[in-house]
Length: 127
Image (cartoon, rainbow, N blue to C red):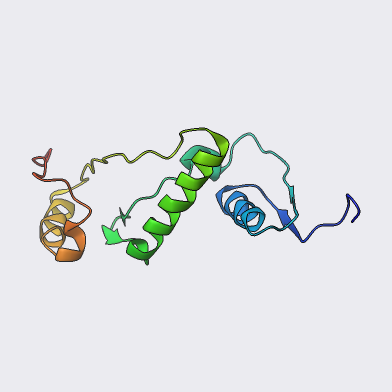
């Protein structure tokens, strides 16, 4: 097999391109990744930030309960393979922009599907 023979060529090495490349490599594929290496990209700024509750509407991330365990397992395998530690669970604090947003949260946080993502006890609102 020639050195110029690839099973997959991925254009862009952001979070999605890098994750796809590693998964293909784990599956035994030969992968070439092409990237222009821009100094500022969303992947470099957010660094793979995973937030289960997001946005102005304080919505649950689409299929987050399904994807989070898969992402966690993937990043732990990658840490082990690379001998590095880069996937860290962190607690986030949401600062509300208005009383209406705080009230919306007060209703949402009581729902069971939100409870699994919250620390107990909840901090007092900073209004």
